[in-house]
Image (cartoon, rainbow, N blue to C red; front, side):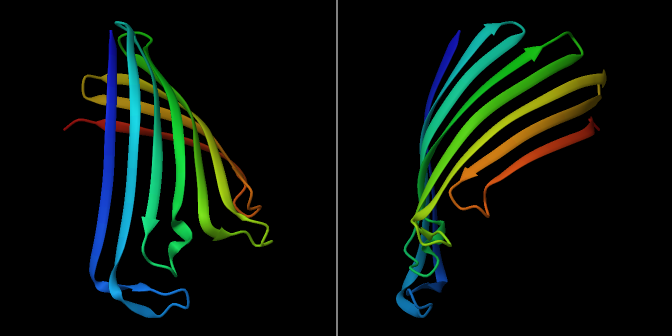
Length: 168
């Protein structure tokens, strides 16, 4: 069975007391407005009783009318693939991998050789172990890499977490 989803998301923050700022950080007459929009598609495949596969993609825009704080304005997109497998009645695994691209129109690089561009790649794995009907143990590992053209933001990371969930 296949499940297709098309979605849209918008966030609008209109400020009552915060004014739009000029390039020189002085308040203007107009109120500050921040907008974030995303439109995407998700395809989920119920491959079997124990496996779910999926892929999702989206186009994103983040925009503010604030000229002084417009460094966070970006346009980009993302793609994620994921898989869920029930290994047995007590153990399941979730894996995902993704790519997230953002181009910042006004965020100048320290070298003044253009504007910032980030290409974020990640792989994540979760293992869920049911210890009792009300207790579950989880362990996860995440690898992430930001291929940024800003050397300060270019990084590689590894995150390992573990925890228990107890239903009360």
